[in-house]
Amino acid sequence: MDEIVPESQYWRGKRENPERIAYLGSIIERAAYRRREAQRRRTTP
Image 1 (cartoon, rainbow, N blue to C red):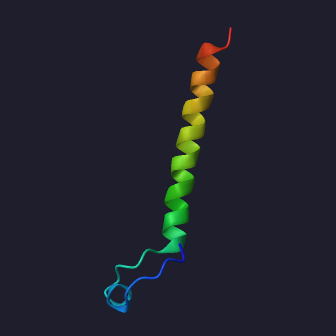
Image 2 (image 1 turned 180 degrees about the horizontal axis):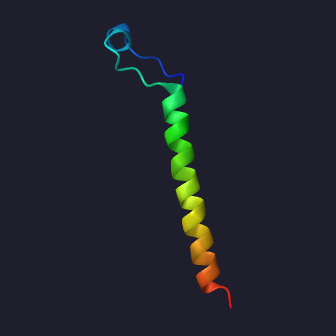
Image 3 (image 1 turned 45 degrees about the horizontal axis):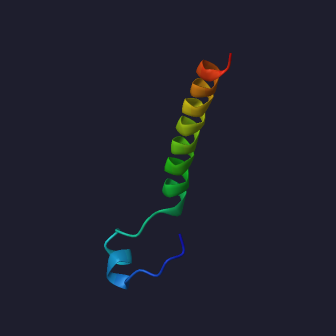
């Protein structure tokens, strides 16, 4: 998240928003967790 970006990207609004990245990351993590749990339930006897 703390990577150095050129000033031009920052001022053009192209710099990544850390809060948005964290939000999207948590959505992906929750989806992966649900998928693993569903697979675990199918494979457990």
